[in-house]
Image 1 (cartoon, helix red, strand yellow):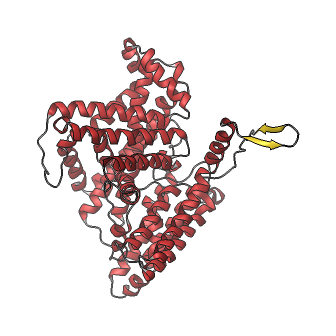
Image 2 (tube, rainbow, N blue to C red):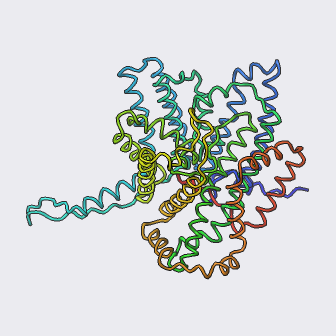
Image 3 (tube, rainbow, N blue to C red):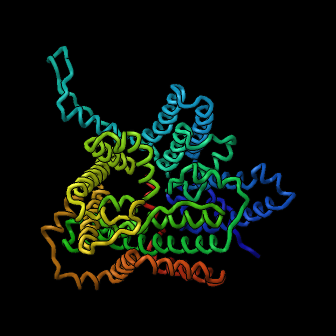
Length: 532
């Protein structure tokens, strides 16, 4: 009656390196439906009198943890042991820190956590980069080695790249686990008494492989609460999942496959105008890709009864680089500020030291994104711009966009529209130009993109470009219109979807899935931040 190919089914449930499981894949949607059914049954059981022991024993927590490890297995294969190693080591280190306090032994334990977590991160992510860089420096510096025959000879060192697999999301879960041990040492939180609770926190699948980086002090108090999802949480969760899927699978994937990738593969074959629109396209693509993932992660967590902080806040509306980093990837920006910038001294030791700390934080933040000089330069320039922004604000506060940012002293600042518009245009184009370094596989490709824009710009082909790339042009226009939409309209749209009946919400999802199926020209692309 039913012709089921069980071998094919089992194959889909096993790890497939060529197609890691992501939120927008069919296999995840299928598994998530089964997961949700069991999760709701366990949650309902916990709320009954007979289920109190189940809540105490944490059967729902145990089930989610197992599913999270399976989710990670479907993303990185048997490298889930890394997740288990980081979880177990930091759990016991934090327990030990809680027992000994902030003395010398406590500091030594924090250092041990740093060495273990960052050591794994460096090995899997930076071994080849560091090897190539060191060998190149030794060769370029003309290092000579003594020789009994000729007196000395020039050292010619070459690095043979190691075949090292980069586990998905290793940067995210190591940073998240590190924040826990550091917070325990600082006295911000108390160490957990259950390894299961900590494993649940580190491995929670909605944010495991691409963030947001959730702080222990925000998430841990929610773990043992009875399952509760009210109508507003459910409606908001559905809205965020729909919005995130649309950003990722409709806008980001389509403009990437059908336009951006072609230009960045060989920018010298295209005009300056096409290269410029590719830069605008990638600027929109990376935002829709990563904020789309964050929206889906926050939405899925809400459906499971957990609340995450906002990770993106319309970053391209920023009027300065400082404001941009308050709106872009908020969980990472705040992590770098709290655990790196402040640890380096923050702004406590004078202006020069503050600028140095900013620059170092952004250089290391660029390196966190990838093992490449492109990323380091990208982070370094952002750090330099942050320093210049602060200098400009101190020298000419009246004309600085920072003057018009909300603060505790002035929550509703008056706007200078000239500064707002000019600051917004300059900030957007600086950020977009720097995304070229982020996207280009080499400095040579980035140089070609800028060369075509500045020396071979052909504005007369604009209408021809629109005609040749109609769908791309429309999606880019739609994406930017939605992004720059006034906040009150965005809130009203969210409120409308949230209050719609369940049948209407289901209809929205069906329509969106139909659109995704109709426009996609290949398999759904992995999220950009999976490589980090």
